[in-house]
Amino acid sequence: MATEVGEGWVEYHPIGILLAVEPWNFPIYQLTRVVAPAIAIGNPIVFKHASIFPQCAALFEDIVRQAGAPSGAVTNLYVSSTKIAGLLGDSRIQGVA
Image 1: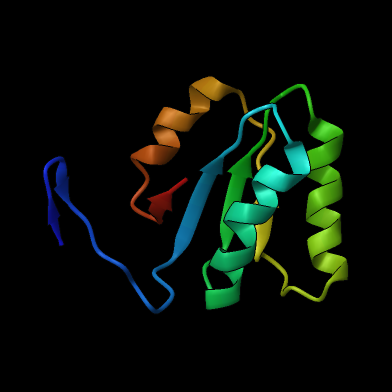
Image 2: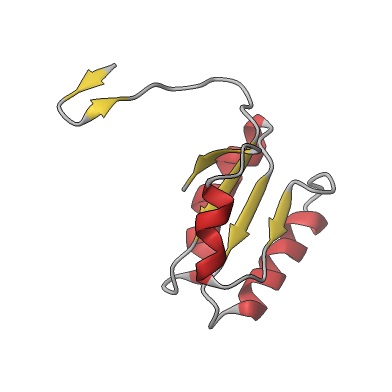
């Protein structure tokens, strides 16, 4: 689908590991809206939450496991924001939110 700003498409199958870089506001909701549809279709998520909310990131990861998601479906990365650029260049990362 062509638009004025570029080309986009919709995938209806898992494409691989997705990276979510999350802001500080609404720490659980922001993760839920990105992670739920991704793991529902089979894409594992690695996420870097706002550094002021490490407890929310750990809690969210635990909640997803308790809900029955397979091991590795969701992984919190306790990394600094400066490490994200390197992740964006990693060929294993297939999408970013």
